[in-house]
Amino acid sequence: MSEYRLPHDEIRFVLEELIGLEAVSELPGLTPVTIEDVSAILDQAGRFASETLAPLNQVGDRDGAVLENGDVRTATGFTEAYKAYSEAGWCASSGDPDYGGQGLPRLINTALFDVWNAANLSFALCNTLTDSATALLNQHGTDTQRNLYLPHLLSGEWTGAMAMTEPQAGSDIGALICAATPDGEAYRLKGQKIFISWGDHDLTDNIIYLVLARLPGAPTGSQGISLFVVPKFIPDASGNSGPHNDVACIALEKKLGIHASPTCVMEFGTNGGALGWLIGEPHRGLAAMFTMMNSARLAIGHQGLGVAERAYQQAKTYAIERIQGCDSDGSPIAIINFPDVRRMLLSMKARIEAMRALCYDTALSVDLAAHHPDETIRDFHNTRVALLTPIVKAWCTDGAVEVTSTNLQIHGGAGYIEETGAAQLFRDARITPIYEGTNGIQALDLVRRKLGGDDGSAMQNLIEEMQQLEVALSNSNDDAIAAIHSSFAEARAAFARTTDQLLDDLQNAPDRAEAAATPYLELAGTVLGGYYMARAALIAVENITKKTGNTEFYRAKRTTALFYAETILPNSAALARAATGGADAISGMAPVAY
Image (cartoon, rainbow, N blue to C red; front, side):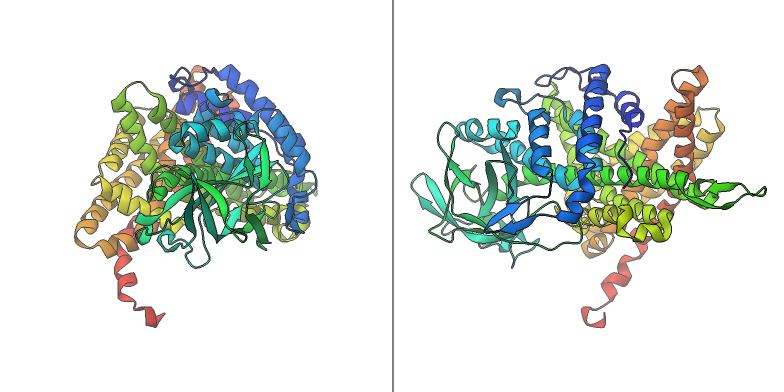
């Protein structure tokens, strides 16, 4: 597999010029940062990623995680890499300074996870879950729980894991049966959880599980679920790990990809019950768990971005180095000279740039929702984050599968052979549209809860922002901008019409709206991608005109945006038609007829 290289110019462009780092650089409660600070942080992260994490990617895929005598052993080199990662302070990057965190904005943390996921998705997944666990405990835990767990999680001494899914329930969380019985100030939990990423490992001294379970007499369904913190080793008041809790990994799943990430079957309570402590109110656990779930959903979108970036770098390197045939004078030529290979590379590059902008812009809203001093602005961005979360998760992970598949295609037969590493990226990417709520669930969330929840108000705000961009595009004299404007205006209009139709269907034909959810989410992602790419093109043209900065970089940015407008945005028309016309066929097909 080709080496990982930090896309420094691309990340800096998005942070500084497209999204606007200054919007979070001095927010209350966050560590002030400048673009120079961020560049230095990214350089350090890039070195660690390329020198330590990336070389372990294929090692982890080959060795995998192994369950031996009840304990999980990670792949060769992972314990040493994790020790170096935590000692360098990367676990604490966006953590609350009151508990040992660095207090960096989520926007910067998103850029860091862009790097970690590209270098080694399996490794990065561990701290992704810890990061989400700290967010949950910080928001819903008691003072005692925060003081006990957060310092150890942020230092990297302990990791966090989410324990939700059960064999009989799957995505139907309301069907879980894991039981929690009061035992003094604690509870005894009994039940089995499956698909628990990094549920057991040898990287740290302790693992902290966030577990959903039912109290005695709890209501049925999702309204009767409570949330508990369950440590693998029960700590004393000072945080020293004590006796082993009644928690065990009883099996590791054999998977298509992310082999180095142990996916565990966890048994809670085979010898009296695992000790756990209630988080939040009884029977309100699912609402609290959504803090972790939504954080994780954004993080899975970042996984899609990262693995797609790695696949693009690999495809580009291969296309430059792979000699295939000769030109007219008999000189050997590399396949990057073939128009169809350049088309594939440009399709990868355009999709990744749109994905990165979407991820980073959503992260900006996360920061503004949490820290802006104006309540009205906080509320606006809180709603914006809720709206964009299912799009980030689904559109970026679908994009990852598409991009890693294109990487295989560029490699040809060599890509289908494991030795090149291209197949691993495709296999690793394939889980991302599935876990943390399948992308079909994300689409239903977008349509039913987000679009229907406020009668389309938040989406209409976004569409109005797009209309304002159209005005700016129409005022440019650049030929590429003119072409981008024409394509974007058509796509935006199709998106607006489809949104209106789905709002009507939610009121009058909800089954039609649900049947249209997936093409509608893809439409939303595609048009949003066009929105960011058009903004990037305007910035690029301005810099080219003024001859500021790296002109070659900005010319490539302009060309990539034009490619997106001319070859990806036109899909909006088909997606709009599918979202408004395909639902009747779905409703009309009886289950017995399939």
